[in-house]
Length: 330
DNA sequence: AAATTAGACAACCGCAGCTAG
DNA sequence: TCTAGCTGCGGTTGTCTAATT
Image (cartoon, rainbow, N blue to C red; front, side, top):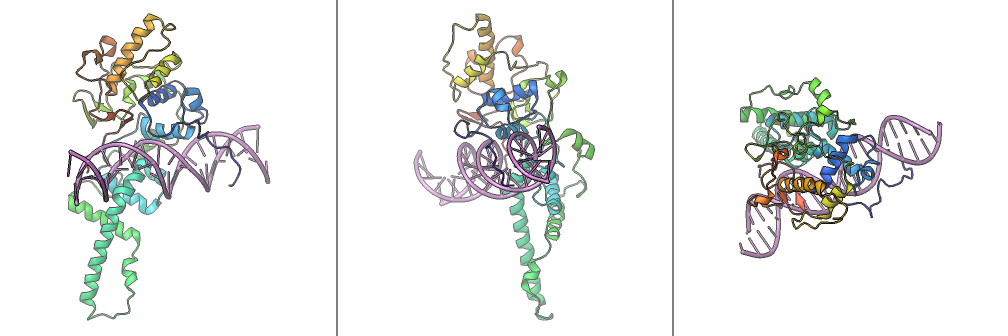
């Protein structure tokens, strides 16, 4: 368009790089309370030093409650390949066929796995063709342009690849239909990558806030294995966003989540609040893996903390944390 | 054990399209 | 109709981790 537009954010004043748990919490809490009507205004309102775009991206790709993480299944990969044949690099359109999957995720899978597979498959096909050609060369005319052999339609290659993969792996499901459970109705109702969400109603807010972070973890097994969307947990863990800016600031004041607490503004807080806050913080630190699990002090006490222990194994580190379920494909 | 390389994926950037004024 | 602002999309980069040398 070429119109002079104001930049979406002042890059000098905006934080960059990986999101901290505190930022995630803040974003989640804000969207829980207020929804996201205007991404541009959201960071300011939520007190985040991020641009609206980044907040949106973080929400859509990560924090959204219906986001599905974990490895792509064989069927999903096949479906991506199939859709890519027809849609090209329209990642958002492709993602619309996969409830809970994000365009970014699909794009990454394509670029890291599927594209390479297709290329190697294509090379294999080419080699086969060449060997065929050479064997037939004696009996057939030689005016065939060698490029033509390679210039077969991509769809043919991909289709070939797909059926080949399916037969090789003995995948049982029907190859080209929508993946299991992916009815169009579920798609339209479950996922809108770009759709705006309103303020969540109380039912939607039920459950641990940590449900949002990093997908869903198996609480009982304490593993980072993604589990199906859990039943709503008993404990509503609702952060009152407006309740106390000091609290958010305190979280931020830990910087990269040091555990050596430095209290600030002591005189302002009531002891009651501080007690709640300390529990909250202890729980949070435990959740974030910042507090040694051996430490008794780190373990939250009190009935209000029951059912909130969902610490994924080793997914977080100081200053950098993954709330993803790291695939084990390497 | 340290250094290097490759793979994976989160995050950023800029453009396109839509919409309101 | 034009302009400006906003959101969404897709390409690309940056960073971290695992594997290899």
